[in-house]
Image 1 (cartoon, rainbow, N blue to C red):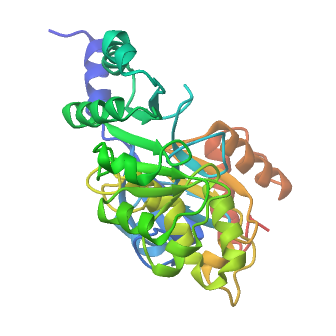
Image 2 (cartoon, helix red, strand yellow):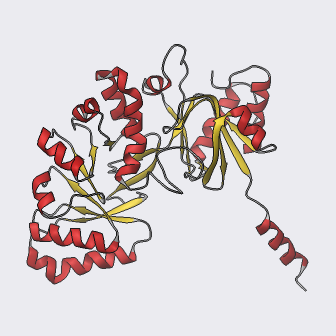
Length: 350
């Protein structure tokens, strides 16, 4: 017969994970219309429901609620990270701090590749402790051809830098395709754009890259480095394209990583997607489209990554509570403050 302690442990394991409601005056799911007074119901690391706050609260009575000021948007995705950017919940790059690590291959000698570099890459892939891809930065055509074969064999994502190798040679080596996205920091001529789109290789524009042609043509692309900062800069030149630019900063990056569809998808909010949220303190949306307001220098207040609120985000909520004369000794206290403020007609974000 199990002990009382063992019985208690088993019962705790069987308890369902609580539902947490993240609500705000505006929610941008990216793949659906903006939702005024919206909410995102989360259990564990997955989204259960997105909709009007009243409907979601009715669907999950008794759930814990975190009431945010401003706008909730799907977490931004940086497909080739060069640093920490506001609102980014998934980063892919060469650094150890990234969620997806690219093993960089710069080998310019086919013989050295065959003798030891190839085996070193395979070992690094097998020993990786998180999702891994390959940064195909070698200028050697034979090395690139073998990298394309390895990517298909191990089902790996590839990224190529167009500053190192042009689209034509990459295509001849078999690198381009749905498993590959390319980093672009300059201009692409119409033929290069057509080739990359034909091969279904997502173009990720880093700062300095000219994304306006694809934006004007209505083609999908991603933004790397500082996704929302780039989107805001481009929006100043194309004010009517704010929604497409936010999609590039979220869903575009997810498509570059092959994670824009299916259970656990990122870059959008909907049932079954990973619970990645970015909260921006958009203060005044009257008479403005929500996407345009988001791109107008709104500061990032918090990130929720796979359902987990960052510690600094909790501190930000507590600071807002103190600004309005509430004492919040713990996380539940902050949640109560938001409920009380709303019941009294007070906007905690002002």
